[in-house]
Image (cartoon, rainbow, N blue to C red; front, side, top):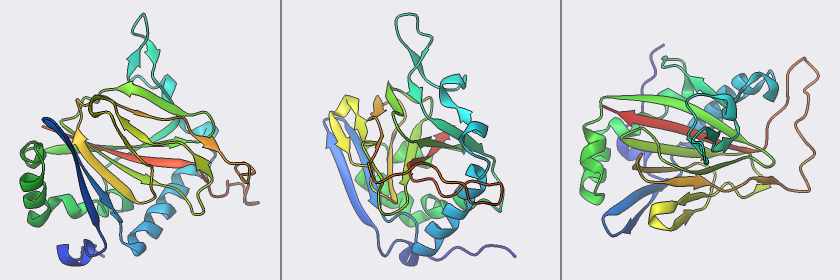
Amino acid sequence: MVYKAPDFDTCSKDWVVRRLRKGDMDALIIDNWYTPDELGKVFVEMDYYMNNGLDNLIKSEEDSASAKGGADGKESLVKSYRFYVEPNPYSAMYRFNYKYMYDEFVNMVTQDTLFGGYLANTKKNTLMVNYYENDKYYKSHRDVSVITQLTWLYREPKMFDGGDLVLTDMEETVECVNNRTIFFPGHYKHEVTEVKMRDAWTGTTHDGTGGHGPHHGRFAIANFFSN
């Protein structure tokens, strides 16, 4: 069965849209990016990727695609777990990110941001998910994308502190809020503050069937738009 996306007015009715601007730099923040039904299905897909446990995910510090820095330029700037999602019609993360393709969205971004024209002219995108638990972070870096979209997800109640996005060049901090997405040019320097799990968190649980229970850290779906 082919998925039929709702019209723009329906999918965006609960959005809270905010623009950050400093000089000739800006970013677009949208809360409630996924509808409640979409959000539930995205978590189902997350659980599928996470079911075999963290040890079976990619350690970002060992991923050649991770940003590098340090004195020798070889130090990984990120410490997280990650996985990549290939484009396919069954992926909730791909399917429910359709909003940016609507004319209404393109018009809004083009009119309200300085980078909207660049987003409208991108031709492809790739999707990666970073997962942060205790002591995980991403130091200040730049992406190779034209535009980066980050969507943050976590299970309620929130079991961690930190994980906020710092737009280093803009000197702006954007709080990690569940179901919040942000668009900004990939060349802006940005970082993720260290995640600390709260005392109430008891660790990743085993579900008794050979898989692992829900993970309560910070998920970031990174969508990289390029030409």
